[in-house]
Image 1 (tube, rainbow over the protein chains, first blue to last red):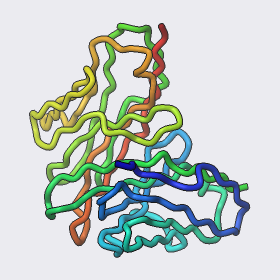
Image 2 (image 1 turned 90 degrees about the vertical axis):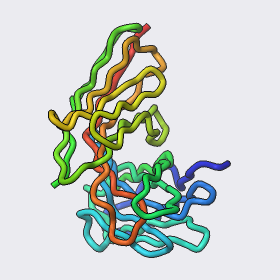
Image 3 (image 1 turned 45 degrees about the vertical axis):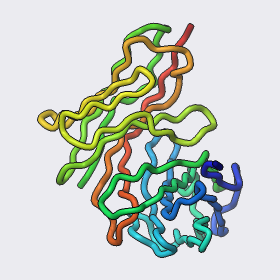
Image 4 (image 1 turned 120 degrees about the vertical axis):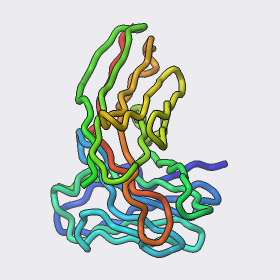
Length: 116
Length: 117
C-alpha cells in the first residue's frame, strides 16, 4: 500500500508568481486536507476536499485554491505569491466511510516552498 | 475559537530520562485529542489519540490522558531513547466540516526534542 506522496519536495519561486503543489492520496482514500506549516509553527488548516468538492476552508485568502481529481489526487494552487507564503505545505488523506465517525488522517512528507 | 497551547522547546534530554510535554486546549464541545510526531525530513505521524474524557492513548511507550476538568492532554514517556528525537505536536479535532469528510485538525506550535546518548 502506497502512502501519501507529494511533489515537488522543494520549490523556489519569486513574489507575484503562481505555484501548483501536488498530492497523491493513500490508496482508497477519498478525502484530502491541505495544511501550511510556517517555520517553527504548527500546521494550519488551509482547506479540505471531499468527493472532489471543497469541504471547508481555514483563514486563507482566495488566492489559495485547490482541486481534487476523480482518482482522489489533489492540487494546491497559490497565486500572486507573497514572502509570507514560504512554508512547508502538507497534505493529509483519509477514508471517510460514515459521517461522524473518526477517520485518521495520513500525512505526506510535504513540499517546502520558498518565496524570494 | 479552538486552540492548543503546548510547551515549546527545544528540549534536550539524556537517554532513559523521563519526558513530559504539557498540552492544554480550548474548544467548544468535546474534541478528540491527538499527539503527532514529525521526524526529520518526514511527514507528521499520529502517535496516539483519545476521543473522550478520561481516555488514555498510548503507543511506543508514550501515554497521554484526556483530562476534561483541566483541559489538558500531557504527553509522557518513562524512558526516552535517541530514536525519540523529533518534533511533537499536540492537536485537537475541530468542528466537523459541512458535508462530512474528515474533521479539521488544530495544532499547537510543536516542541523539538533531542535525546542524547
